Image 1 (cartoon, one colour):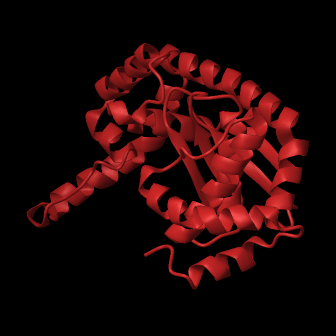
Image 2 (cartoon, one colour; image 1 turned 180 degrees about the vertical axis):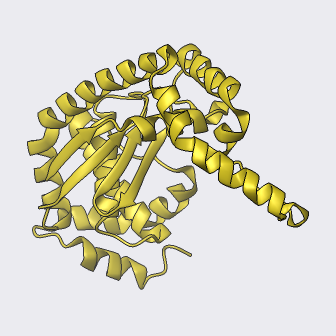
Image 3 (cartoon, rainbow, N blue to C red; image 1 turned 135 degrees about the vertical axis):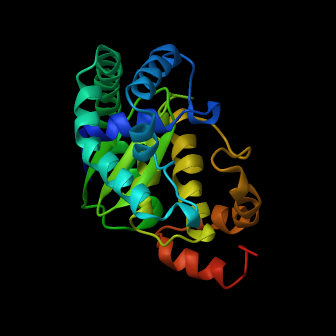
Length: 249
């Protein structure tokens, strides 16, 4: 398993501007710098800001030639807007902090890669031979999603030891499973729970991860504990076996 960590300036700009609510922050450490950049962008152009972060919408009565021409104008300005923001002193702080975060993520991943690769192979029986690109965003803002085509977006403060490693594997495993709640719960049992437990010498439950999956993981826990005792594991067979029992209902 190979991960290539990158900071894409345009994506970093867009993500930093889109996380405005308190729920979008993973820590308060650099919030002052982030808000300063958001305010700078807002003062540059409120319309293009809204367009960039997906808050640009029309009511039926707005769908006239004048407003459509206005939208086209804002779209034409988007490239210039991104360029102006990326050269600002406010953004340079954000970029520098994210570059340092890249070094942290890369160092932690390289330290844990061999051991965690062995853990995931043992727990799943999957062929772990993919290469992923990880687009990093600011560590004080929440981000974690598998984008498809072996691409991951990630950014978060380190809530506990080896947090980044565990959740990068979480996103990696999304590329091997479908989008069902059952698949997501199994991914969490592999990474959020079992891998975290082995790396940090901790126990579960209590569970971490998405709260809405806790009930399902509780139902899966007895067969999961039995599965962990088996000599040769096949995670797809495990999923099929628990799926027929209806634990996701």
